[in-house]
Length: 169
Image (cartoon, rainbow, N blue to C red; front, side, top):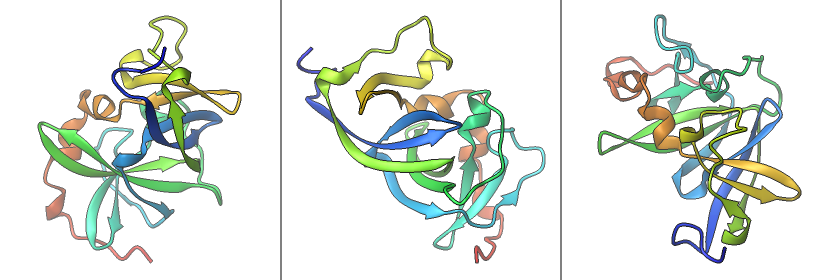
């Protein structure tokens, strides 16, 4: 296949969640942060139960391991927050994603990208945009907007500006 869905290549940020490699479109990534203080939000959905201060702005924090039904593990020295933009109801929303480790920004050529198989996947196929091969590993490229469309999005989009920002230091 020479062109995958009209693209010759896809620039992605690769990261690890519980030993599994994933990728996000690099154009969605605002910044990568060391782990900061997290303010828990009682009663929030399991995968979206915290807020972080990103340059004075209150940002919801998502743990995709929980969304993908993986076990939650304590942070390590490699844990990072990937600050991204997602599209919800036609509006851009800033969200932080916990990553066990962030690897690199790389370009994946269309020849190594394939549509997501409907069978044999550990994750819901609608959350995966495509599967790529990089450095001998299969990498699931996330359809991050679809991940946040499902069910819990009211927490992401809904009025976090009324919560006071806390010092992240």
